[in-house]
Image 1: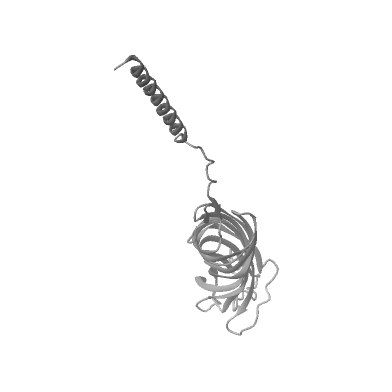
Image 2 (image 1 turned 45 degrees about the vertical axis):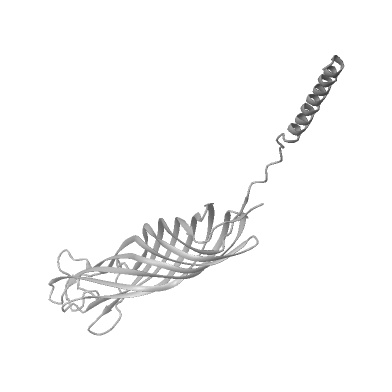
Length: 292
């Protein structure tokens, strides 16, 4: 093979190599990674609609407004108590409370409406000393006595009351200060069991000392109103704080000093309560997650 032929082959090989290298570089450039903008993160749309259940604990400042009417059981006549008698008074019935609640919410835009019921254990207690005072000649508070026994002051009553439990059935309505924070008002029916205990100490017409203990429990129905705030702090969970004013109305109890004393006390009380409690709820619905 002559020199011209070899030179031609060499030139051809060099050109082919250069072309191959150029094509490979272009392909590699086309295969280089391409960077795109990351998609936006999903947005949680908080949803208050649905059922919930939870528990609470707190403290209550109750008040009993109590009056007593003294009565002669033999004649049925109302006894007009002499000076020095105690015929009523107001006393505190404060104590801890704890319980559970359940309800349902409906959300419309920034408004939340709902119904809620709860049942509470209560340690609210209080007491009051009452007395139908005696006189030197016995007097109307010691029926049949012609002379007050030495050391006697009349017929005395040690009265105590205990709100054993209570509950409410209420409507709720409020506005969302933010998607997770609800401010609301509430009101509706209230009910509860009040136990009244009385220890009576007096005398028979013959001057013999007597003592008797009586007890009465009554379930009362009344009303309640209040305000609260609730925070949906995590998926399906919320925390709340709530104030309620409760009025269970007036209730009556009667206690008789037996045997043979002919003395009875008819007690009439009205119970009101200021309730402050904090709670936590589990919501069976979940926040809506908007995906992009």
